[in-house]
Every structure is written in structure tokens, then in C-alpha cells.
Amino acid sequence: MRQTLIAGNWKMNGSLAANAALLDGIRAGAQGLACEMAVCVPAPYLAQAEAGLQSSPVAWGAQDVSVHESGAFTGEVAASMLRDFACKYVIVGHSERRSLHAESSELVAQKTLRALSAGLVPIVCVGETLAEREQGRTDAVVNAQLAPVIAAVGEQLAKIVIAYEPVWAIGTGKTATPAMAQQVHERIRATLAQADAAAAATVRILYGGSMKPDNAKELLAMADIDGGLIGGAALKAVDFLAIAQAA
Ligand code: PGA
Image (cartoon, rainbow, N blue to C red):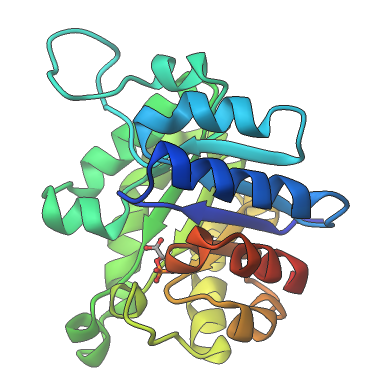
């Protein structure tokens, strides 16, 4: 019912030359895979992703979007601009944006809405820090991040993707165990169901945080883990494809 989505988050990595090789490798290996695949690339490389992935089964997207439609917002990228490069997805509320750029959950909710209005599929990231987990506040933190998004999107809930990314697992090599991740995913789905039960059954909830070829299968086998948002391992075609093959 929910098609697995394996999405790469390249973060601020890449160059024209390195991307060309990576896109070629992904494109070559992606044929015939059962899961859906996507790469979220730095904005300057969207044209390259579009050219390199067109007529392949792999979608592409961006890592952030402006909350504004257009105008005097130096340095920002509008949702309509992402659409100009045929983006399907855009990541919103990644923990690095929340912590390094002070993005609030309210802002993330408005960005989610902006993405939807432009016809993009937002991948909304939520997740707790290590301190929050140790204080037993994981559910409270995740729910507080989700609440404004659920309120903002209203009847469009079925159109979003959620990524649960425990901050302590991102780029650290520490992965949540499949059981730990499943527990949070299940609670996220229950929270969504309180707003819209039909949408909650179809929304894909991805896991992110040191997902690698050697742990992907176990994580993706869990009932409420519908895919992965992959950082480091998305920068090597063989690793990214191995994760997609495990799905
Ligand atoms: P990671 O990053 O796979 O390198 O831990 C995931 C992410 O931040 O989206």
C-alpha cells in the first residue's frame, strides 16, 4: 500500500564532476527496483540532476525552500523555482536547518504548505536530540514538531512525507535500533491518525540517521518504516543502490 521511498540527502556536498559520476551510477543501477528513489541535491545542481535523471525512475528534489513566494529575500530559493527544474520533492525542517538556522516548527509548517501549494512533495523532518531522548521526551518533542504541520496542511495530510531522524543518529554512525525506530514511527502514525485516519494509513514515514547498506534491511522490515532519508551513504552510488535493493 505504501511504496517504499529511498531518498538521498546530499547536504552541501558535490561538484559538477563528482555529481556526474554519482548520477550516472544511480541511474544505471536504479532500473527495475521495486522501491521509489529520489535524490535531494544542492540547489545549484538541480539542472544537472534534471538532465542526468530525466527518463530514469529516480526523482530529484531540493533540501530546503523559502517560506515566501517571491521578492526581496536575498539568498532564498522559491518553491516555483524548484518546480522550474521539475523537482518532485523538497526536504523541510531538517535538523541541521532547525539547529543551525533556528527554524521553528511553525516556520517548517509554513514551508510545508508553501511546497504543497507549488505542487512539491515536502519531506518533513522531525526528531529528538540525545538529551531529549534521555529525558524521556522523544514523543513530546516529535509531537510538538508535528502539531503545527498537521494543523497547517489540514486536508492535504496525505500529500506529505515524514522523515523521523533522531538527531543523535545523524552522521554519527549510531543508528536507532529497528525496534526503537519502529516505536517512534508507530506513534507518529497514531498522531497523524488523530487528525486524519485515512491519510495516516498512506503517509510514508522514512527513517533517517546513519542508514547504511548493512542496517537498511532490518530497519526497512519494520511495519511503519516506509523508507529512508540517507545522508552519507547517498554519496556513493553502490551504497545508495544497496539500500534501495534492501527495500
Ligand atoms: P546520515 O544523514 O545518513 O548521514 O546520518 C541523514 C540525514 O541527515 O538526512
